[in-house]
Image (cartoon, rainbow, N blue to C red; front, side):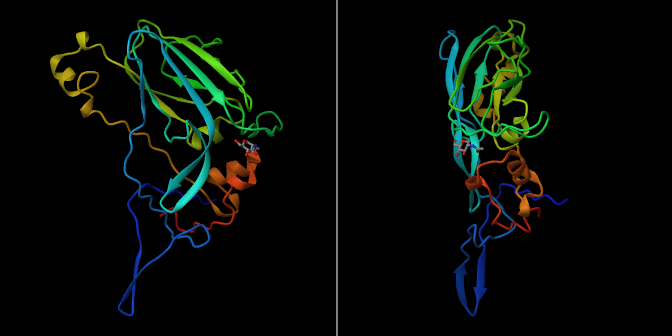
Length: 254
Ligand SMILES: *[C@@H]1O[C@H](CO)[C@@H](O)[C@H](O)[C@H]1NC(C)=O
């Protein structure tokens, strides 16, 4: 089984012939392979409480365009962005996250432990010392198409600082939605009072200009939906209009 990954790099192709210069036009019907990317590096959007009050945020799951190089595909994303926003918190904080699922019916079911429910979601955090019971990090919460859920996280006062992350965790669509781009960072910030001067002078929260937030993810499509995201789209019975059967990215693994 072959898989094809494209990485984000600058790209354009110039053809020289008979003394004339022509820029090749790349499109889904006339693909240029390998895909090379080309967008400027973009940090995630930052979401942070301005006071010590709970951080309150509403995040929406929906379909959005995701572009690599000349190829634009439809993905399920948080607030239409890849990656989703970064939430910055402190030990002992409360965080109220209202997660709205704006995806539509029909959703697709199937036997237990198969890829299913492309349009049902929930959210799971990694690294936070919080309860696994609703309305905190209960991975059995089911947010169907058109529904929403209000998470109310109470972060332990002894929560270690660090860079953590979140992603969907509804059994059946975890992999499909996460690998499709639904993921983001959670930062539990240092208390400057407990940091050495040296560390404080080169890092957040006082000197954030030295911090760069990077999330890496493969971008995989394949002909005949044999592997990568295209394979998952087929297994999930994803909407036909979001699929790329007609695009042959023969060299994208380069
Ligand atoms: C999921 O939701 C989208 C719109 O958000 C819709 O186009 C699609 O048909 C729905 N169902 C599936 C199986 O993709």
